[in-house]
Length: 465
View 1: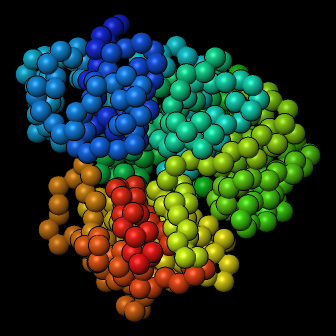
View 2: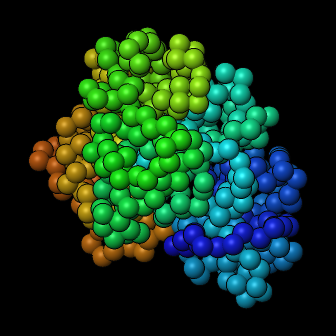
């Protein structure tokens, strides 16, 4: 794993950029921004994808597969944190003395000096970022943005706007959110995760305190999440900085009441003595919390609360967040990015709220060997409680080396009722098993931030057969 250099002095010019792993959700958006800014961009990835095709159409030269020759005329190498140190393009850049930037450093170069809204948190970052962007566009502000997911309204994960604001999804997993100087900091929540980087829960909280303390105009934090409350209490902010909290808690500055969860969400946001009825176009009770945080950002920036509540309803979702891919013989097939037990619970609760009389069949791809080993029991509890049946695939290791004895079987073995789970490492066998189980009215959902979405064509074909 290659980590961002938080002390790196950014160069004045970057010249021609080569992105290693250009098709990733974060990398592709940043690469597009450099293209739109007039930079020459090349890249490589281990496989083709829609993101790679879009970047090619935008003017990037991209190779499939990695080779030192791809770096031939690059002035700057941009890398993802998931890159292996042995990557030949990375090693060639080191050999030739070509500057290497982590993608977070490259994004920091793009947003330097901007009036920045930075969204951070263990869960809900991508959705909240998308909501902020969509709401501001509806309010005719037109921000520049980069998100970890494709916005339904724009069909893209990044873009330049005509306004002064930038909106970014700030990644806490490797500490890179400390590279930015936000005017507005939105913290959705904290959770036990990324201990492979931080080492302890105390260190995670310390990093969020440092991030919150960088807010120059507005700090927005969850009133429901204990970690976020602790961060808000410890953050050192100037007297000129407005601090707002949101959630169901009685003492929240923006409080959610009258929640009605179903195919869409309806609720009221209580703020400054008034109630503002709100209806979202997306499902999932957790999205009421995301919306309340975005409402806090909007009113904190000075927008009319009635208008702020209205524009939240325009948001139609982001890619890989409870995203419907197909309906086959009455069986709906969804995909979700959930890769932590808290996110799995939220995704499955959303599925249960829309499935009606049908059943929820989950396809779980564990993400990271370390997370699977540490949280197998929590994953099993969530799936056994909220899904009718779960098919577990093998671990998507991403940036990690395999750990002996750690496979998807660890999750399946933690189920109390073994009849409600199958550990099926082979994807075609897994798709066939789902097709055996599913019947009209059921909802099938893949869950992981790995590459599990690639199994969806196999699921659809098996269901069709």
